[in-house]
Picture 1 (tube, one colour):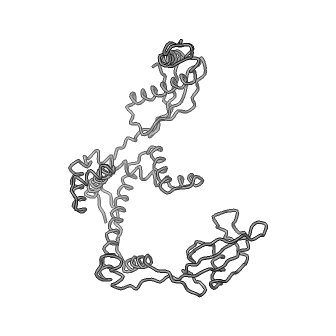
Picture 2 (cartoon, helix red, strand yellow):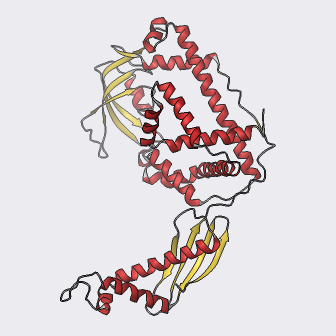
Picture 3 (cartoon, helix red, strand yellow):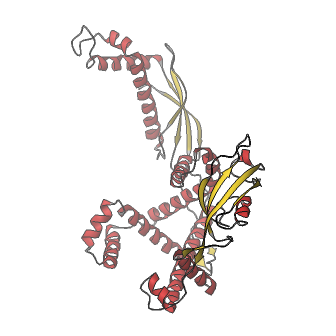
Amino acid sequence: MDIQITTKKSEGVERLLEVQVPVEAIREAEEKTARRYASSVRLPGFRPGKAPPQLVKKRFKDAIRQQVIESFVQAAFQEVVDREHLKVASQPHVHDLKFNEGEPLTFELHVEVRPEIALARTQGFRVSRPAGQVTDEQVRDQVEQMREQRASWHPVETKPAPGDMVTLLLATSNEDGSMPEGKDYRIVLGGGQAIPGIEELAMELSPGETIERAVRWPDDFPDEPQRGKSKNVRITLQDVKRKELPVLDDAFAREVGDFESLDTLQSTVRRDLEESAKRDADATVRQHLLDEIASANPFAVPPSWVNQLIDGYVQAYRVPDEEREKFAGEFRPIAERQVRRDLIIDTIAESEGLRATEGDIDDRVAELAKKRNAEPGQVYASLQKAGRLKEIEHGLTEEKVFNWLLERNTVE
């Protein structure tokens, strides 16, 4: 196709191209598309494929026009890719398209490409490893969480205190001052489930009592129009339940899991915390190494890859539509760091021949099978069906890359 392509921007990972298609090329493409339509469409009064091309062209003008545009956009894109040997990072975008009768077709083509990364320096860095020590207090906190999970609630006939679970019949006055019927709410006092003023009223009551009083809504209340407003609130305290934690003894340890004694449980908790601290320290060292490499070897990252990662987190965290723009702005530096991290790992793996092999994957599957007391073939088939073999391959490649980096850099 006779297409004129002018590069307007060629910096980093972005290419902006101005494309112009002559009138003659457009006319030829329209005629060819019309003949293709004529060979297959049905029009009243004509046998299939026998309608005159000019009639077909008039009847299907918009569809033919759209196909012509798409064909030239694709042709321009392919020509640029072939001419400049581009490694495209995302689908191209078309801007400022102009297509008037008897005039050339013009548009701008925006393309993102994979960055060319030259890691001139990957060694000689010094990074610090977190101590990762586990304290007695951390062990106690973890065991206390287990106690909290197995706590029971018992009714009491006293005024509630912070930490108690209460059932309230709660009504809030309308704008005209009328008081509607109340609704039941179950909350744990001090847990942030109700505004402080309502909790304070509840703690003045004994089970069965009712109170009505004006309550001021906090200045930081999520619903902005309600902030700082005072409303009459009527509360009936229906019941109070108090948490009772299990006794911390050998019986508790046996209830939690297969532990012979409380000492065994605490030792296991400490070991788990130490293993978790080690993993966190390893992750910190790895990230610090990659940050050092990124600082020493700066390169741009494709914005579309960053946006794709942000969109994934928006869906994972179920971010409301009205908060997406704010979330994207706050999360963008993290997403850019993640994309840059992955590109560095991929570049080192490629240049140093560190990609996981089929043999590496088979060995890891065999390890997993041994832990599960299963046949390797069954585990492999299960992982393949779940689409997790790629995940294992990526993890093994990362391990090889970081082992390679650790041999060439200093960890203090």
